[in-house]
Length: 407
Image (cartoon, rainbow, N blue to C red; front, side, top):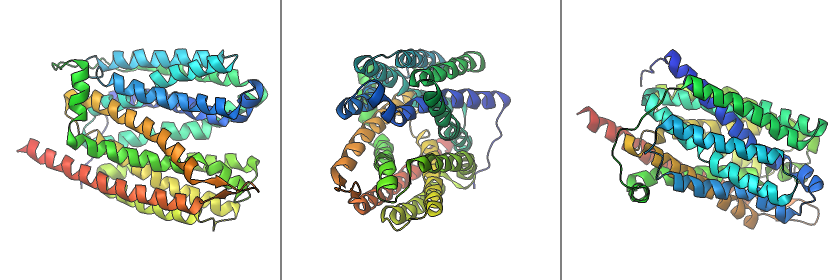
């Protein structure tokens, strides 16, 4: 059992600043799907055009993260963060001013190109500033930014949309973003990189060639793939198969957010105390049980639907917090930025492919119900089990590296 180290005052300020920043990035990512009905009507979009806008973020984020990986370890981390976050905020402003399909598409490409790299830069800074025995708790607190966007950010954005306009919802994100930007400027000290590095493309390929890194890349492809497959048609399954009214959906997603808000810091502490792999394995068992019960369609009552989603996202948070903390221990310091940027890239691209795969497996019947949903459950289960095997290998690798360093 590892003995957790206490956070310094400065470390607490870093966690607060990075969490506020990621809150805006996640809220922006989640807001567009929630605005689908509004945007289809107000901008007179076809479903194909909206699908293109929705996928533009992930595609540009994946490409941008891969390109940025060659430079992520060459520049001082705080400056690198500020450049990309400023670009993200410019994209948000364009979203707020978009009058048409074409301008909104350009805005989503810009927000993806800059916002899609933010998590990898933040995680590299966490690895620089926090020891491995602290990172579970750090990731738990940072994960709360994702939950807060569901519990607070998304409902507030939708209220602003219904009361005023969808453009004003993006303006709100920009205002929050400016505050987060100021926190980063004034709270976080520069983190210089003194290592001599090879040229950018050589740095990318050297990271891609390291087989030990691919255990993490592959695990995260499967983790993200399973999560995206589940979420892609979840709202439609709830309304068309399980009979929930659309007015009940916010309660389901609110329950997910509250569960994540409470669970993430707890699992962070447990991961630091009992080991990352142990918490990941527990989360996998919990998630698999919830997924198989839910996708079988056996749960019909609203209360049980809420309960199953809560248990599922307990498992999801246990897996995400522990695996992310563990992944930051794999690369050497001179590779951290590139490693995490490549990891972000493959996760974004995995999300695009997973959504497409879900569309290929699931069909809609004439009455609107979704067919083959139990098969989706088994597919997600297989991905979760394989990801657990890969995370086990990563855990063994990290422990072996730690023993070698201590010799």
